[in-house]
Image 1 (cartoon, rainbow, N blue to C red):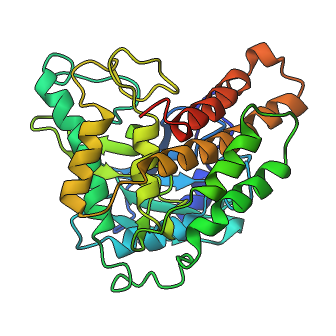
Image 2: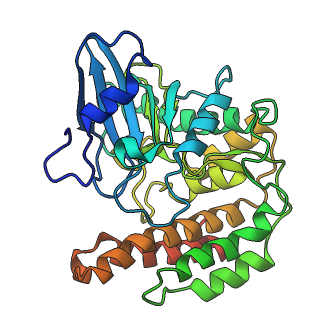
Image 3: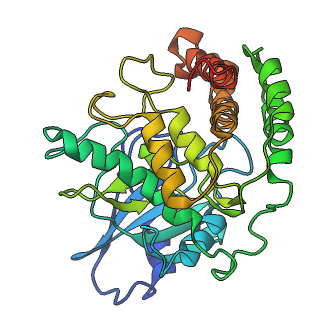
Amino acid sequence: MAGTAGSDVELDLQALSDWLGDRLGPSEEMLTARRIGTDVGVANALFELRRGERAWVLRRPPAVLNDKSASNMAREYRILRALEGTDVPHPHVHLLCEDTSVLGSPFLIMDKVDGFTPGFELPEPFVSDPALRRGLAESYVDGLVSLAAVDWRAGGLEGLGRPDGFLERQVSRWLAQLDRYRVRDLPELEFLMDWLEKNRPEMSPAAILHGDYSPFNVMVAPDAPARLAAIVDWDTGTIGDPLLDIGHLLARWTDPGEESIIGLQAGGSEHYPTRAELAARYAERSGRDLSALAYYETLALFKLAVILEGRYARDHKAGVPDENSQMFALVPRLTRGAAAFARGERV
């Protein structure tokens, strides 16, 4: 077995090695694995695989899922294959195994990306160079512009999602998920449901939607100039309204002097562009209409609140005291933040 002490998921290295055989090239050298990444027990589990000098990343679901629709490895594999040859930075995926007898769940294996995830801390030279922080934020937007421009039909993604009626389904879809584990009332929920139904815009032309786009789900090249090395974590991707991705990024963005809804910019808000500047860049480069941006920001935080409430519900049912549950206060902050966008109190 391989894994970190106390991890929720371990890896049967012998079973994996037997299944791999020569699928990743000559197998004379011993296969090794080590757990990487953070947030054990919540996020998809990642392992670095090595054979001599060759390295890959294995990705599989966590031990416990919020919802049966989460952590879809086959969906992620299909999207990554469709992105080959496009301008969207992404890891090259090699293998998908849907045979749960091998490791207990589906998994995929992809190239290891040379870069860092900027969701928590910034390394040098990004710490010392304000221009690199601005470039970093602009690269987040440019990644979404490239994604929205991909010809998803040519990439073989017909049937991946149901773009017709995508926005019309959102409130009922996420409320149905919430009802499967709801254990408390959430502030502003009734207002949000009503506002989102009454203020739904005409959908932007369908495109690939990442579904959870933020600095926590990108990797950045380690040197200047600031640029994305890869967008990662595609297991909730679909075909839908791409403005929900930019809404998700900007709803969590904190302008200088503003109270944070949920921390997003590593190192604080200084030296980063404002939401308005990033929105203007997206609109100019994508050619898409952002006049209803507040709707997408509201919907994004509403959706995120529902997802994270699943983690609170698990804590609650396990008897974890509320003061020890990170989600106890965070989820209500998200619903209040969503309402602030809806009311125009946060722009």
